[in-house]
Length: 220
Image 1 (cartoon, rainbow, N blue to C red):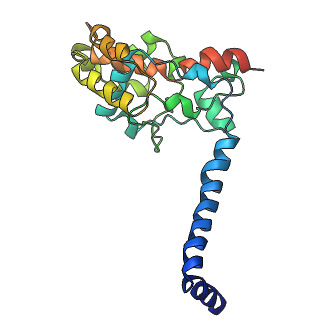
Image 2 (image 1 turned 90 degrees about the vertical axis):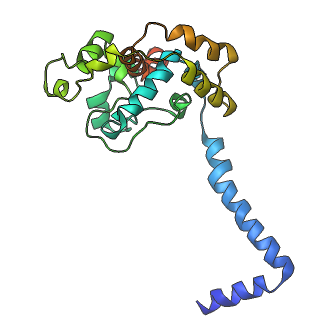
Image 3 (image 1 turned 30 degrees about the vertical axis):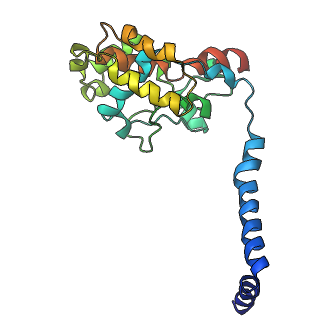
């Protein structure tokens, strides 16, 4: 400790050292924490994940958050064999069943979650539309149906699109790959859709692109 104290004192009592040394420490940390990890990122093939989803998907995420689904479900399939076996299909996804960063580009806010009481939903797009509708309406069989009695969502309008339009405008301002034409399209896209329809659209989007691209071109 005495040596460390002496070293720190010798550095900080010299004006030049007091400026240069902290700067070197900062640049070293920046190199290790930012530059080197970025150089290690492999973006090959992930451009296919950047196409924007249907606006109903973004509205569906709002319903997902409003109903508190994230408190019981995660969307971060872990890269371990047990998770793959329980929540994914290796025959469809090949070696890339776990989520990658590009899958969350249109999530605002992120709903990856941390507590897994129910199943992981990062690959809920593997289910059929009728299966998800039956589950959410409480009409499916099994214990999960009793915990998902959200039939009332199918009787409520998804919204007039105004809130979603402003949300997309904010996302564009934050750098999301969305356009003004996309923002305007939400009014037409939400016509005659219920909150339940939007939630189902959101769940069907989870893993859809990975199944169509990574599963198709990268599986063994």
